[in-house]
Length: 265
Image (cartoon, rainbow, N blue to C red):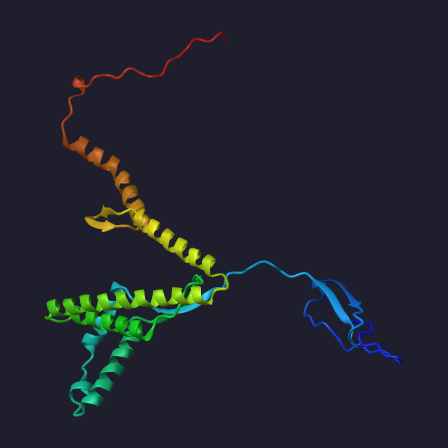
């Protein structure tokens, strides 16, 4: 602003300003005389970029699948564990075990950063849920490498029930906080109701078929199974024709459905 914003009887000064890092966004600006202050008001018309960009959230996850778990088992089996069972102090042996296990766990199941467009309803799991998930991981690992599979199976089932209940409590608390902190309580309440309704409808409408003798709801795997089946149909027909003797004289001819009409030319 180059005009006077604080007039006086002798001279004026320009001590009121508008700061911007992009002058092209300001279409119009002017000084308004208010007559009720020793400073005049500044009016500016600013064009804002109203395009909303969805934020990409970076989350840290572990690569856990059959291959990584097999690699972890191999690394643990090849370790001699001398520092663990030769230690006279149980606390020191426990620390050594955790350090060794964590070392091989990070090698076989490394962490990596994944970009995810999480919904606004995402919230951080509670400490109880984190502990239960860690316990589930340990129980499942021990079940595959122990003779007490039945006992560990019951513990896993019990832990899974606790985890499910803790997750329900966390979700209810989160939704309650959303409603409590919202500016429009009825609108936010109906928004939550519609979201849950859509999730229930999606679950009810999900397709489940047997693929290779096992129930499958993955649409991609189901489509591939249908595709593979129909691709093999000609080969199966060919094999069946080759294995069964066919008397060509006993075949009934089929009249052609093609009709040729005479033309003038």
